[in-house]
Length: 462
Image (cartoon, helix red, strand yellow):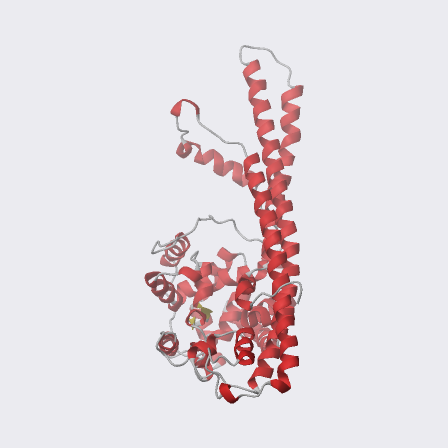
């Protein structure tokens, strides 16, 4: 293909990219811009229409001018940032469309390859279909396909080459579109950052922020009714923390542990999860204060979190999660003859996709909610995330955080918690179960089960 070829590994990061979340961040910058624009008019009016003369009048006008210009420059910066992210979100959606075309061609290639050879080594099992076909058609034996030396692939060569080139071409388009858009976005964001004024304190004196806290809280309460103080449907404002890096406990996890310390113990059923509806209703009722607090903290309806819990708490006991995790880690060891994905039945899967806790959450999703980078977890961080997920109270807060992330990816991200419809909550449940494949029959059945249990959930939460 004249446009160039790329492999799946080159664009695998697009699996985790979500245009809706990028657009949500653009909306946040746009909200701040609109909030600042509201300040400009009264600031200009105060500056130009206040008539009085005294020794301090000139200083007053100078300070007002400085404040107005400060607001103007900040509004311009946030506007530029919003436009940059909006453009990147559109390009990212296009890139993911190309990526989807590539994965479909890749699956067709994989099916075709399966009619001719079976990967017998871990290296071959881990290789993507494009690499596997490149090895098979060259008969080099690099990946050690079964009987590759005598393998006759001539009857599938043309079709396999077509799927290979279609996949590689689509992956290359996805890579090119995203890379060019990202570079343009980063450049524009740097320009926006340079527009932000640099605030310095004269004379080395530090402001007494503690003394000003009462006034700041009062101003915050007065502004709470302004819709521009938060994005619709975003829930309560929370602190935003930087990258955790190698730090053992993240600020998000510290916050959750502080919150659960003041909540009832509830009921943990690590060894013997509930099975019947009566047992599930009892679990919901005994943990309702925790579920309610977690949902409120995430800006969600309590019945959404409790409904997901209803679906999940009758799964396998906690020790079975531990066994699954142990076997996947063993299979991931370099000397293992099999990859974790090729373990039998429910054991198959990469270690970071192992689910833990009564409300089953994959370890990598839990890490994201807690502010860690799933791709660079230290062993200590991984153990801490796993421990937190298996504690039923912390698990509820982490699950709520994950559900809030899912809601932010939907077309109704701006709908407040108390206005979410049953159909919208059902869709969130399906997304929770199916991820990118939430429209599959399995995920849709999960959404139906969520809806069917809502009546009993609401009764248990009373």
